[in-house]
Length: 186
Image (cartoon, rainbow, N blue to C red; front, side, top):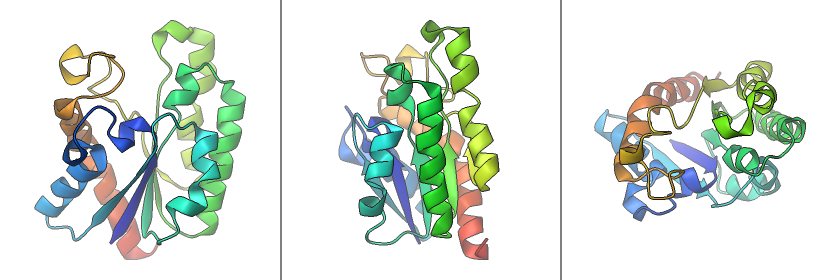
């Protein structure tokens, strides 16, 4: 089973060794649990949702049985208009839906320093679009890691190897739900 992890630096593994990156650690955890799966690292540091949309065909060129979408952090950090983020993510999910490939959308949340108004417009994007497109939702990719200095690199934005392990542990049930969708053909 081939699952493409389409994302930004959080997927690509910025600042950690290749085998410590999210896709590698996720694949190892899934194999340990008995799944025959290949997690493809289609993460590009610095990518926004629009960038991920622009390279979607490339990311899926070798085929995919499922896709994990982890994008939006760079849009938020750059203060991009949430309406534009929503439009790009809506288009990306529409295109994936047209391929009939099951999707797990990994959500993001606005940083507190962006203010309550920005968060009110940004945070609902992920659950609303997951529901609209019938995608599975993991509400917050950095759950349990964001804000914990011991789980992040010195930049306080990118998880260290221990942080990646926490992400994998927490997202694992959602990825197994994606695998079940793939197996059932729904």
